[in-house]
Picture 1: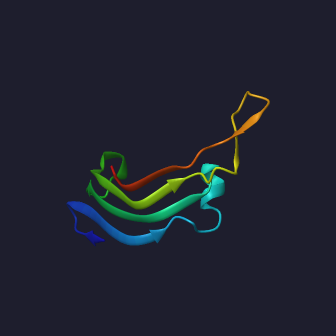
Picture 2: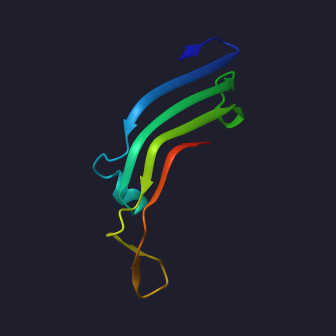
Picture 3: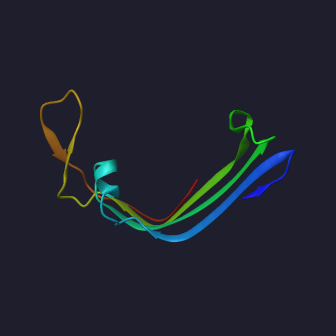
Length: 93
């Protein structure tokens, strides 16, 4: 993080973050697989975060959401269903 009187800049890059880490699948509600790449670039004028602007880039290699076994519970519906895995070789946003 670079800080000067006129602006604060935060730049973060993280690579090969494994999505099968404990707890992450519980947050999403389905098992996850793959490697995530994250790039974050935020600038805040005079350090004021409400006025900050920037970008976030997410890339996932070999991503899979679900395993075909774990049941997905939908709020408001009594039964749960098994979700077929959703797989992709590369996903970017």
